[in-house]
Length: 468
Image 1 (cartoon, rainbow, N blue to C red):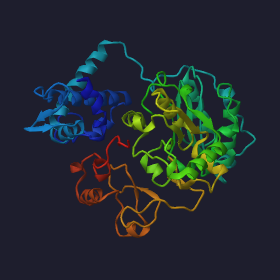
Image 2: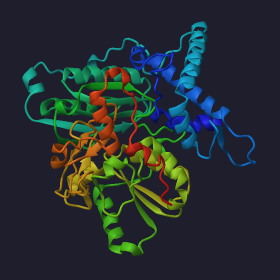
Image 3: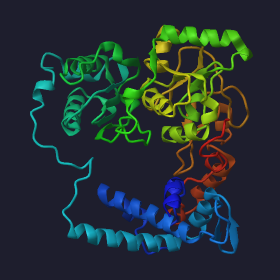
Image 4: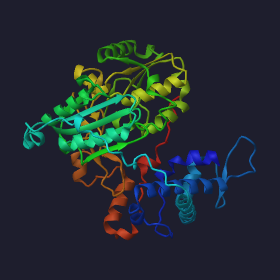
């Protein structure tokens, strides 16, 4: 059953229709506390794994695995998972509810364990780390030209909850919005606000005794507080979610950092050799929707949806990297820190290098260099540009287009490239399936809506592509 439980992690992409079950409705589930939702989600995954394991076909020869359910035989994990999620939602819901109730009863008998993100921080005086702004008007801190900062810093943080409290107080005082992740391994953030406020924020980070960052560690672009919907600061296991314990694969194992000038020369040499060069891989470790609108010339861009899929991608394509020199890059550099460490841990590459400061710093130095197209960013802007190249197309008519919009279908989280003309014609969804579903949703009552994402974009893409 362990194998089934591990492999069914992607079940979260197949949320069950609970409209016919006795368990909590979606609305009720949202009303649970954060810890209760985590417990319930855990029970749902565990119940799903147990149900799948019960369908294992034991008549097959040793070394092969298949499942029997509803008179059908399934040879692949994805097939049995999809069948169970769509056909047996009532049974899964009942199992989930029973498991959830047992878990709650066990927790009532044991001392309550504090969750990482819910721990009550002990009173700590953080006022010494909050800069004095009495000489600056509130208008200066909120209005005028703005910036968006992108940064990260790896270091040992003894009490991340104290740093979290300080970051919240600092950003609120400076009227900054954005997202900040704090962990025992460091801090990773992107914040936006007025230029005066972001400058004060940088000074505060550079003067903090724990981080001691340099101004060069911050990547800046035009923007402001309006680029984010709110401020989110939290404590996590990892400052970039790769899904691998930082104590197992540490950033300290990262590849050799190359300055933008050095990386530029390496790419230049790679392109000069053309097809004759077969011992070097230029690896984009971002997600597919990022590399789709901008990338380095002649790169390998894995068709993965999340960075947490990157380790599996490496594992399933190890021969691709064997005895190769790898040049890695990402948006700001942080994913390369963990990604290169994971790749190096496999001990198959000849050399592993990474672009220091990521594409952001490279474009500051080479706006018309070997990176063409837009740079995807994780805020309301979706992308920023330094050159006029458009390397992607409209999803519907095929004309050059690289401006993302969120799919118009409710509950779908896909981004869509649909040009102005196609959007005016009503093509605002990520695919025809979502377009049809969106039209049906507009005519249906809220009670009959299916609260799950299911479309050609997710159904037709393998979770981990094989590029060997």
